[in-house]
Image (cartoon, rainbow, N blue to C red):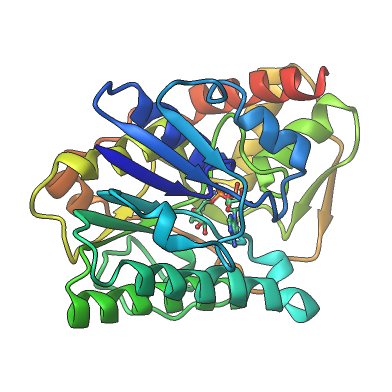
Amino acid sequence: MKILITGAAGFIGSHLCEKLLTDKNYEVTGIDTFIGPTPVGLKHMNLSSLQGHPRFTLYPIDLLTADLEKLLENVEIIYHLAAIPGVRSSWGKDFGPYVTNNIVVTQRLLEAIKNKPLIKFVYASTSSVYGEKHGKVTENTHLSPLSPYGITKLTGEHLCNVYHKSYNIPIVTLRYFTVYGPRQRPDMAFHRFITQILKDEPLTIFGDGTQSRDFTFISDCVEGTAAIINKNNVIGQTINIGGQERATINEVVSMIEELTGKKANIVYLPKITGEPKHTWADISTARNLLDYEPKISLREGLAREIEYIRSAYSI
Ligand SMILES: NC(=O)c1ccc[n+]([C@@H]2O[C@H](COP(=O)([O-])OP(=O)(O)OC[C@H]3O[C@@H](n4cnc5c(N)ncnc54)[C@H](O)[C@@H]3O)[C@@H](O)[C@H]2O)c1
C-alpha cells in the first residue's frame, strides 16, 4: 500500500512515517519543503532514522507549486499534515504563509485527488478550532477559533468537507490536542521550558501559568493517526485526539523541575492573544472508531522529551 505524508520532516509527520514503516506492507512517500518555526537542522535530525529506509522516499518540494499528478500516482492513503503551525506568529504580517500553506495547499491537494481512487484522505486539524470552552469538547461542540491560525485550520476542515460532499473524497479529520514529546517544535511550550531550565536561562511563561491543556504524547497521537488505515467506518468523521492527562502550565513546570533536578527561574510574560484558557478533549469518538486509548502519562512523556532535548542540544 502506498501512503503519502505531507509535512514528513515535521514533528508529527516524521514520527508517523516511522510508525507506518514498521508495517512491511506500507511504502511511504514523504513531502516537505522545510519551512515553519523549526530550524532546518532539527528537521534533518527528525528524518535521520528514515533516510536510507528502503520503503521511504522524501521529496523536498513545495506543495504550492509541486507537480501533484506525478506524486499522487498509485497513492491510496494521504495524511495531510503540512501546515504552518502555531498561534503566536499567526497575527500581523506573518499571516500570509498561514493562508498559502494551510488553506491554498489543502485546496490544491483536494483538487488534485478529485478523480483518483483514493481510500482515505486524513486531514490534521487542531483543538484551536474550538476556541474558549468550559469542560470537555466533543466534535459537535460549536467552533469559534480565537486565532488566525485556528481560522486557517478550520477553513481547511471546511474545504475537506465540501470536497467530501461534492466529489466523494474519503476525508477523515483529526483534531489534535497539544502534542508533545521527542522532536516537539521549538516554538512549543515544553520544548522552550526544558531548554531554558537545562541552560540555566529564565523560564518564560506566557500568562500566569494557570492555563491548562490536554497534553497528548506523540506516540499516542501517532497510534491514533495510524489506526485510521485499517478502520472501516471513519470516512466523513471528525475525531478528537487528546492525551492521557491534563495539567496547568505551572504544574508542568514543577514536574520539569523535579525531573531535571533543577529550580526554574520563572519569568511571567503577557499572555498570548488568541490562546484559550483551557483545552479538554472528549475522546469517546476516537475510542469508539479507532480503539484509541492514550497510554503515556505526563511524567513519563516529559521525561522522554527531556532526554530528547539533552541529546539534540548536547546539554
Ligand atoms: N504539534 C501539535 O501540537 C499540533 C496540534 C494540533 C494540530 N497540529 C497540526 O498537525 C500538523 C503537524 O504539526 P507539527 O507540529 O508536526 O508541525 P511541523 O511544523 O513540525 O510540521 C509541518 C511540516 O509541514 C511542512 N510544510 C508546510 N508547508 C508546506 C508546503 N507548502 N509544502 C511542503 N511542506 C510544507 C513544514 O516544512 C513542516 O516540516 C499541522 O497541520 C498542525 O496544524 C499540530
